[in-house]
Image (cartoon, rainbow, N blue to C red; front, side):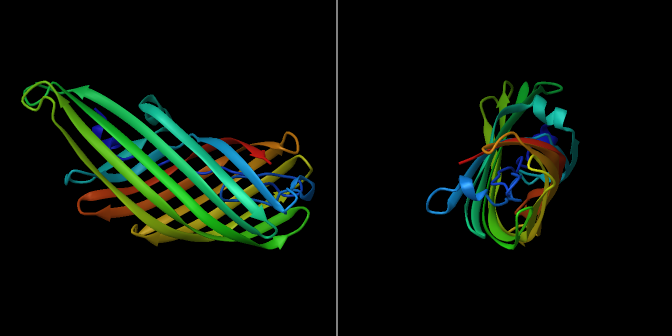
Length: 263
């Protein structure tokens, strides 16, 4: 039974665009919208659903139990996935930008117990929600490149529920979780090689309720047309949170794929 490894799950993070003169990119490495596509008041916007094929490794603990080391591939996590929603949005005006990234993931697993005395089956459900809200200012802004200094806050919420079926504990359940906020700062950038191809990347680091919160990535993108872009890259994100018997010290990394729509 993979109860220990599924008790807490890091959310999948990160994709939105608002490309430079040539490109679009991934959250939080947002780039400027081409001037002809901007709305009359100077604002430009983007929306991007995305998918992060990430594995998970680190230490987790809940219900006051000792921490457990986990090491799961993306296929392990995907086999237990019930539902996931990941999307990001961006609004930009000149050198200034604001952006958000929302993610919700629900996974579950169950297993029969060895003897079925206390319970015949144990079910574990884990729900994770994150919301990152930030703002940026472009210190470099030309026809082929953009570099933003960014800052923002990330809200984490992780909840685990254990339910028992059969045996002495039949019908009983227990819930444990935590919600916390971290502040992050860093850089994001994009560089266009041609009107179609570009590269993008970012680095963020911070802390708050967590001792450490960080996020780095690099990707290559392709502009299908003036409104739609496709992107593929690699991302790694880590957080180290512990409070009152609840521990969430994990690193998540893997390929990321997304599509961005600009308007």
